[in-house]
Image 1 (tube, one colour):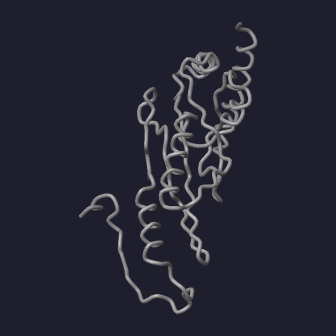
Image 2 (cartoon, helix red, strand yellow; image 1 turned 45 degrees about the vertical axis):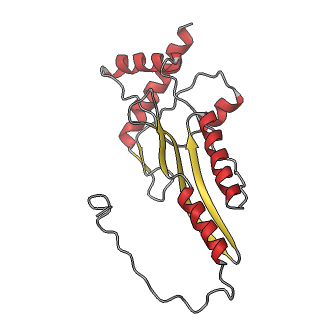
Image 3 (cartoon, helix red, strand yellow; image 1 turned 180 degrees about the vertical axis):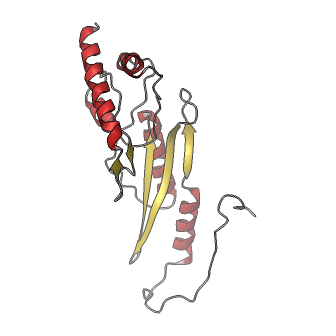
Length: 200
């Protein structure tokens, strides 16, 4: 009933344990701490953008939980387009881990990149797109890691946008580009660079 209409294919099955279990199971106390930590970890969308309707701004996904001997590793994918929000999220997860007597090892990820709707480059690109194609461009933002975050971290005041041809299945085995979108993209990029060079 809880998942009706959202995950109707969900099934739960209980089977006898495999015979190759480790010789010593976790203690009741350690098991309880682990389960409490898993239940406490934030999951899914934590904040949405106040500027772009429907855009996820901050999220966390405990994606992989692996047991190796007497050690359990929980890998979380934490993302935010607001650097301060990402720092708060990571510290919150670290606090939960400390309460469970666990350690946190943050890894290097993509820094956040908050869209600037007042960007000069965006305004020029919009105007150039309208001139070339006689229609409004679809301007959007995505909740994903982009190189713009890495560049913006090193050059904080750089005005940036991200654009490209129509690509499907990005970073997956079936990744592909719609060939007919490549030339219009190239024409737009060349025209935007020309217009940016002309305008102060």
